[in-house]
Length: 196
Picture 1: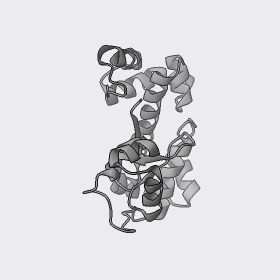
Picture 2 (picture 1 turned 30 degrees about the horizontal axis):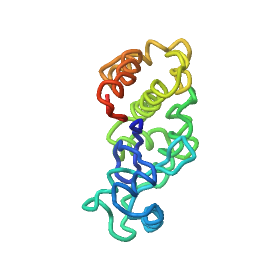
Picture 3 (picture 1 turned 90 degrees about the vertical axis):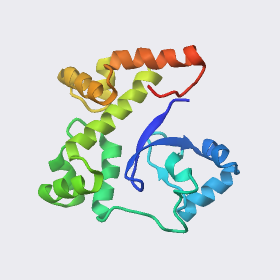
């Protein structure tokens, strides 16, 4: 299975997303228990592009699992909403700080400052990270060209070299190298989902 990285709004970090079935196996419980834990706030449900429910793998660790409804959230709910909007709108090349600030009814200066406080990185850097993470999944799971992958995650057609640069800064490989390496991994060791 392909490793899926998603930004967990509660852990405030990039985490591996696992299915409800995988979560049940990890914890040795029935999937209904996983749904109950989600409802109780004991584990974190992740926003992903698929319609399936995914769980933050970090929240499955019993020592890290919050007790009861002890949910850590961002200090400003509008910043939390902004993170959700980025996750939903990252393919739009017009996704800017100005536009995002307008969506949540806050000034650009406030959003810029609070966003950095809450996520540890700037708005543009965060959007770039989301796009590159989504691109990594497309590179391995589809036959789209590099240009098509770049366009699918929000890069303008004339910005493919910028996409290549951002991807290499994140993964240490070009998109082409990443695709080739990721496809070889299952053949070499039979370990599906091994990270690149």
